[in-house]
Length: 216
Image (tube, rainbow, N blue to C red; front, side, top):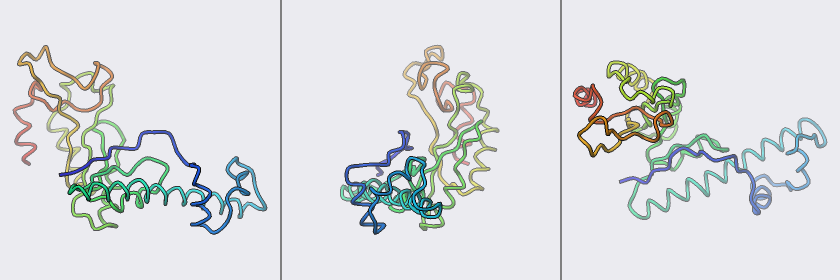
C-alpha cells in the first residue's frame, strides 16, 4: 500500500521566517546582509554574489528534501505505507527530493514532448530503486477532445520507447468510471475540451484490445 504525492504544481516557495536561521546553520554565514543579491544586485564581487545565490538555492533544496519529502516518508512509513512521489518540478533538487521515496514516479505524455523518463532511470540508478514508475500517456486537451483517437498500436510504440528509457511500471492516465452502458452518456475527465489524459475505459472502440496490450 502506498501514499502518493503527485507533481508539485504551485508557485516557487523559497522563504520562511526560519529560513535565515536555517541558512546560517547550513552555510555558516548571515544571509540577511546579502539580501540585495536576491534582487539581482552585486555585493562585493560577481564571484561572491554567485556563491550567495548558489548557497541560497542549495539551502532551500536541502530544506524541501528534509522537511517535505523526508518528513512525509517518515510519517507514512510509521503507518505501514510506502511512498510514491513525483519529485518535480518545484524549487528543489530533484535527486535530493527523491532520496526517501520508495518508488519514484515520473511522467510522459502521449502526443506531447513532455517526457521525464530519463529522470526515472537516473533516480533508479542513484538510489538503487528496482521499480521506477510513470504517469503514463497523459494527453493534452487539444487531443483529449476526441476520446477515440488513441490507437493501441501507437500507445504501444510510445510505451516501448519509455521502457527503453528506464521506466518499468506504468500508471495509466487514466480511467473514468462509466456507470452507463450507453456510450452517449460517457463520462470524461472534465468538460469536453478541458480534460487531460487518454480514455482507457470500456466505451473506447478499441477496448477489446486493451487487455492483451496491458498483459504485454
